[in-house]
Amino acid sequence: MKKFKIGGVPEHFNYPWRVAIEEKAFDSLNVSLHWSDMTGGTGQMIKGLETGSLDIAVLLTEGISKAILQGARAKIVDLYVKSPLQWGIHVPMQQRLQANSKEHRFAISRYGSGSHLMSYVLAQKEQWGKESLQFNVIGDVYGGIWALENNEADYFLWEKYTTQPFVDKGSCQRIGQVDTPWPCFVIACREELLLKDSEVIHQIIAIVKKQAAALSADTQTAEAIAWRYHLSIPEVTQWLSETTWNTESISLVSAIQPTIDFLLDSELITANDAESWDTKLF
Image 1 (cartoon, rainbow, N blue to C red):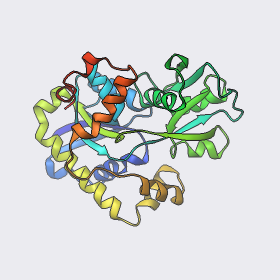
Image 2: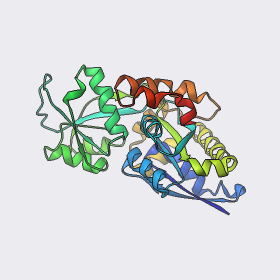
Image 3: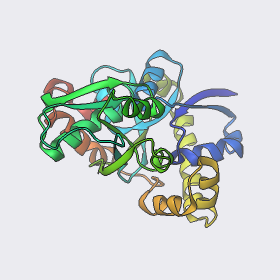
Image 4: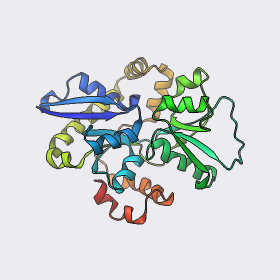
């Protein structure tokens, strides 16, 4: 029996993976999947793929694209979520900054993570200069909330439904949101593993897609996700209406092109990094 170590954020997006594993949907492939919650997000998963502590990861498009183009030995295998990710813009309860401030301190989980890269998207939207961005590495969502509460950051970007409980209890306030201008989640794996086990990895993904399609059609899914992830049913119902898991075959090049354009425009990768980017990523 082949064994694979899978990593993803402990959030509602990965419900299809969790259900498929719990219902032993992969037994027909004679494989065993061990899921690990990655509270540190995409940055933690990139490190896991590089060190071999993870075989497969479900992570943010922008983070893994940047990492691979700058040398990480991994490949994007498929698109997982086609819709954008809605990042909440979180600030302390007593917001200190003025709109024309020359400094914008962001709490980020890791460099190269979504919370890091999306700060550039927000800066572009708000017409802040990149030189005004400052970063405090805090590890995970709990560190981000702590940084806001303890004057260690002025902003913290994180998926807005995941942070809703913190907003509800007054740990921070959400002043808006910024969405990814691209499909938000992809599935990636270690390069050497893909060379060796490409067929079974694609079979695993096919099962996850089938599970996602079934959950999308099930009227009980909102209630099940709300219970598991400590969210309200109306919140999850709204989230499901805004989220599209990828259940078909699509062009990865077309889907990820906007990500590459953003990374280049923001000078987060070089023209040399982006040369033949599709060959490097897939």
